[in-house]
Figure 1: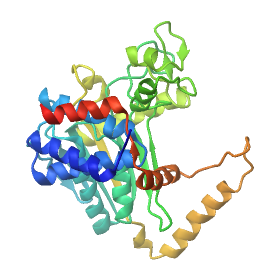
Figure 2 (figure 1 turned 120 degrees about the vertical axis):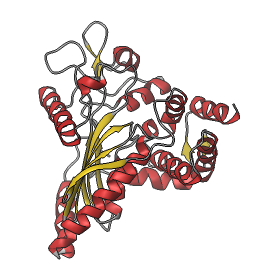
Figure 3 (figure 1 turned 90 degrees about the vertical axis):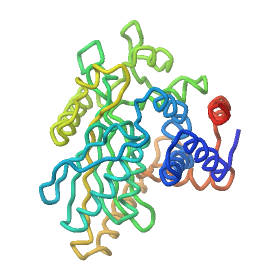
Figure 4 (figure 1 turned 30 degrees about the vertical axis):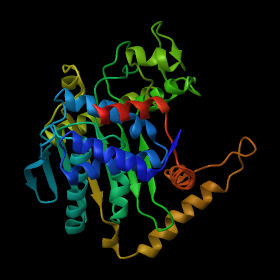
Length: 335
């Protein structure tokens, strides 16, 4: 089924107000869920709304919590998310990192005790819209085996890098697993297999069957042992810089919560050569685009390019939404 972005935003805003968020917070959360879905990332947009509401009902997400600064050292700050909504905390900490970057050239906010930020690229775009480069990452519950191990001990720790650009921002938003678990669930909802192996099944064999991978949450690290190492390092950095929980500590909780995140922003305008920066970025993109495809009709994209194309299509035609997900959301609205 297809829904207009305006209708989705309206329904979600009403739903979040019903669950006692203030008008301002409800609008922001509804906007983020809608924008992610509009960009073609339903796995971390509309499809996450029922789980988000479930976490509110269980008290995992504290509706009235406000992220607070714990300590600061010039352009470096530690914040505590107080177990508030991840979207609200991430938006606030990104804004603060932007402010620090514009004051010092670079700023970093390390956040502890927060919840899932949904689509990490949201905050990369937020920084890019403010003409800042960003490097953002988060740890998660254990959902991947370290390379050579059988059981999940590391997280797929999403990693975001964004670069502002007049012709369209560059936004890399990737999990350290071959597929995010939201994306794996998307394939499950559609009754489709993954295009490549995405994790291990209950027989300890690599599989592209989403149901078998989701049953024990044993994702495949990108680059095999390299992704495993990168996951561990990102967890270490998020934990050390925030003074918060590691994946090991998160694993002791029944539900993923009280995670740790890092927001780094750089203000490239301090160099005073914005035109040169645009030229250099275009040089890299043009060189990469100008490559013969392996298969006829294939195209090389820069990070964020396909999302921009998907957004334009959805604005014109309406957003495709899984019917069962939308029905769940309407039921929640009517409870």
